[in-house]
Amino acid sequence: MKQVFGSILMAVGILIAGASGLCSFVFVMSAFGSPSNIKIDLPIIFFVGGIPFVIGLAVFFGGRALVRQAKRDAEKKTPPPSHDAEKTPTVDGPSPG
Image (cartoon, rainbow, N blue to C red):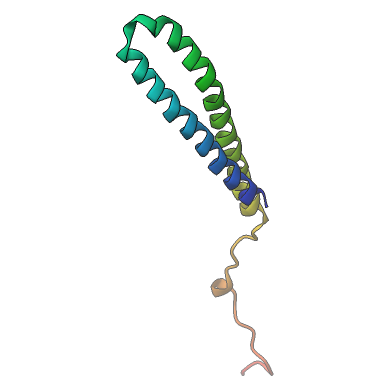
C-alpha cells in the first residue's frame, strides 16, 4: 500500500512542480522581453511560482521515500532462498546393504 500511495504522491508532485515550473519559465522569458519591469516582475514570479514548485518537489521526494521504504520492507519480509539442491535426498524404505 505504501508503494501505491508513494507512486501517487510522486505523480502529483511531478504535475505540481512541472506546471508551476513551466508557467514560471514562460513568465520569466516574457519579463526579459521588457527589461523596464524586470526588477518588479522577477520577485513576483519567483514568489508566486516558486512556492508551488518547491511544494511539488517536496511531495515528489516524500513519495519517493515511501516507495523506497516499501521496497526495503518487502525485501525484509521475503525469506532467504532455500538451498534444496544441497540437501541430501531422503530415501523411502529400508537402506540398501
